Image 1 (cartoon, rainbow over the protein chains, first blue to last red):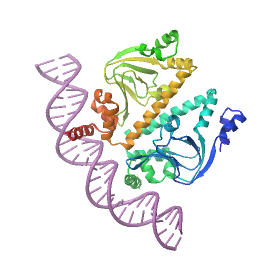
Image 2: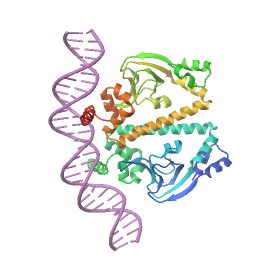
Image 3: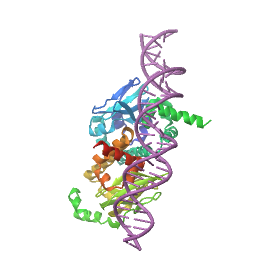
Image 4: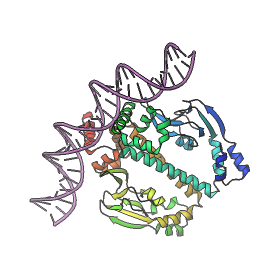
Length: 192
Length: 192
DNA sequence: GGCAGACGATAACATTTGTTATCAAATGAA
DNA sequence: TTCATTTGATAACAAATGTTATCGTCTGCC
């Protein structure tokens, strides 16, 4: 799992082995809850195989905020960093193979590597990138119609449309399942 | 303007004076464009007095993404950091007193202070905070009705409701000016 | 003072989107 | 296989929101 990244990190073999051995491999079925709402999340997950959905409960309704696929890392980020109760549920969609690491181990590693500017800069860059991604998604809710958001999703994140059940996509786009059906139906008729 | 922050920064008087002298004071009327769409923004602004709106053009329509008031710093953040053409317009709403600093000076200062862990941590914290703020605003578009968003705005950012013309608030909430009028009207009638 | 433009309320109508209910197809478990 | 569950399409109706137009008020400017 981690060998593919070995050459990207300027670490000794010893340190590399020490760090990668902090990760624990698990296999879980679909619809496994990895982090519950209200729990203080002490785990960070990396997806080897499968697909994860982050959602929260709003007046009894499922609202999906993000999807994650192979090679992405997932946590209830605010909970993981600030030790707040998680506002969101993290749950598998497909049967998945995951690696998790505890917050303690992450903190230890971060403390050790912070002297390596290359890694520090990369982490800061990741933070900015995540900020920009949120901005982009946020803007689309103000400026685009649901139909346009769906078309952008097909264009920019085809994995989601291909692998995720449609009612989750609807809750991600902020529309009802019925309306997403209508949107798809209209698009098909327009193209004929 | 900067004296009120003097004791928050662990710097020598010499460095403090050197850094604060990088800022330039300007007074501008209402509706002054500070950063145009498509421009690579090389300035960061701090508001001494007044109020600023960040917006972008979407098919001829004004869409407001943020408001800023006294003591806040404003830039077309992605443009400022990554030197992209700015996707947004930054514009005063009220006659304002501003201080601006060039990107060159910011880079110089950041390079010098990065050895001070207190400042580095504070900067990283600010980045996280901004990420979380975006998340919150973004969630509200998925989970709240326009009426609820307007009520939250009154609750959490009363300055905006008090100081900003209503059609800008409508474009910030993602509704038409007519509909925001209706929302206000319904709230008034409900309370009587 | 008078005028133009900005701002906001309201009405009438059009369009979009949600809700509820029903049905059909696919899927998974016993 | 068979049955229950999940998933998705569609119809009919209700509610929310946008669009266009009109009017009144306020403000800044000459």
